[in-house]
Length: 267
Length: 264
Image (cartoon, rainbow over the protein chains, first blue to last red):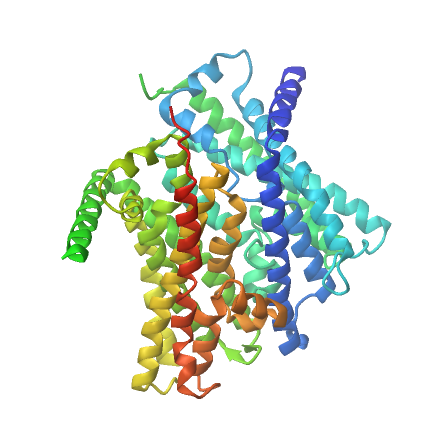
């Protein structure tokens, strides 16, 4: 366990070095957040009665999405890992006396957390200072906040497990681009990055909420404003645990298989 | 004569690029598919919002689609040609720009020729399909002046985005790094230009009129197409927006003049 933690720390500190990129990211996320909210505001003003959640909850959702982009974004898979699987350098990693799955998992988690920790605070502060109803409000109550924190951790674990599963499948395909493209665009759409899940039509939404993608950012961001509360929230958290176990199990199995009969590319 | 020679040279560059791209056909189609999927997600988001809402700030679904498709075409056209500027920072850092400067041909032309992104046709195709649908459904009463307006929009819009790419490259002379913040103005515009700029509120509209003229190539001519503004001069606003290219070229020129080689 200790070696995976130190692997985590190594990658975490490495990620903290990219401060200029973080500022660019923060600026981009500010603008994205403002424009997204302005867009929803336009819809809200035309037909407020058709809005599926309160406007404050929508604004909060969007600000969390921007602040924690690095934790939950689908496309933030590491090109470096794909590259090393493709050119064979992954063999060096495999030589280490570590299991490949927890190693990649701690690495992926560290990269995301270090990126997010550089970016989230300025965005959250800025969002909290914005006037109602565009800004980020205090959580609905203490229970909702605790639930928010817990489901955030769960959602993050599901996101990382999904990413590592994609890395694992890459071991079996020579060119990973196609798989990556389809997986990331599907994830972007189904996890509520394009538009929050409540905005989808009812039947469609009910199916989407069962998918692993809905067990990522969707749950904590909606629990915070109590858009998701009571039994529904507990059910969603249960699904998060379930999906994490399934995805992590599948990822572990795929990698164990890959380790056994691996063809290293490159010379 | 000179123009023809330049075009010929550019055509030669392009044909080399296409030939080399066709050596990796699978990778080419995958990137085209990727470009398509990214903007298709944007479309889907819009589609599902309009399943719930009937209009936004007075625009219907098909009208917004018309707006989005023209904007996407402008962007794809500019990107197809101008993506050479995207990798310009590495060109400056590696000192490859020195090689460009000693050749007796235009600098912009050579940088442009360094990359031609045919994969953007994935996105272009989507834009054309949406445009056809938008035209069919939005009940625009077409006149000669309106057709002309669309042509102006395509020309002016391509010029504006091209100017943005040029400015992005010019900033590399000063920073040696690609300035990621600039993505707000290119990728951000692609992402949010799907709705008429006026939707985002007054202050953003003002910014998009006077600072970076997105509204001139999108919002105002659209209002003319939809008969919300009459007066033929509204159809010329995209050309006015195209003037944005001038300060961008000025910046580029300034950058070239103070360029110091950084390669070894």
